[in-house]
Image 1 (cartoon, rainbow, N blue to C red):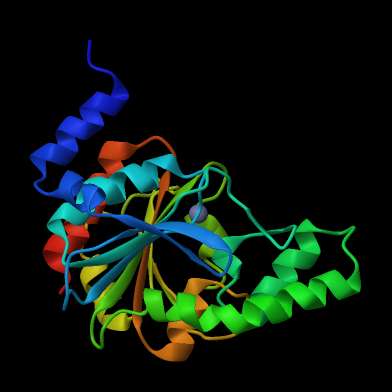
Image 2 (cartoon, rainbow, N blue to C red):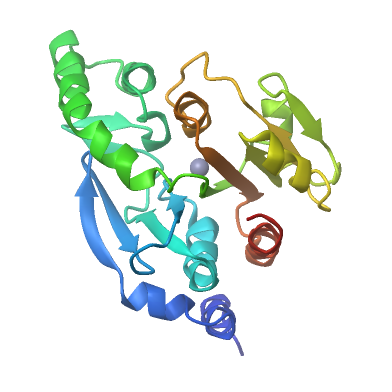
Length: 243
Ligand SMILES: [Zn+2]
């Protein structure tokens, strides 16, 4: 009998150096969040990210996939969606700006006092740039983030999107989100769903808004939790077709 885990390990091994990347990893804390840092040596321009700890499939896919990629990655080590920063709950995928962090802190900690909220925001302000530097790809390269969803789909992103290619209407929970029109032009020719979001506002603290403000290429791959093969296939398509 082959368990899910051992099948994934075998698959990762078959992809090359995925396990080697994991073995070369080290842990670091940035902005109060613990990450496993996966490296591919100096000069590797791409950046990879798994930011939500409860998205195991995305984590497994990146660990398998990074072996064939040319870059370095951060994978959150916790197992929960939200992180605890100075005693408060925070969605780490909203911490890329002060406005986003503030909205997330207020939503998730309705009982917190004003002083604690403002103190935590100031604490994050002093550390945020370090996180953003670690995630910003080299000029012309890209950041690739992997997420999983349980009750979220491409339908939730249509209003915020400039363009949409619904190539797999029967799989709305599987889609790419990109911020560069050239990447969209390539991805819309894939067999997969993709949306383009180029606007920096409103600033909700998300990575797509940050990428638009700072002018780097960002691609997010959303897939239903549990579909390891489906997410890996899409990650590999992207790696093969995008520079
Ligand atoms: Zn996520």
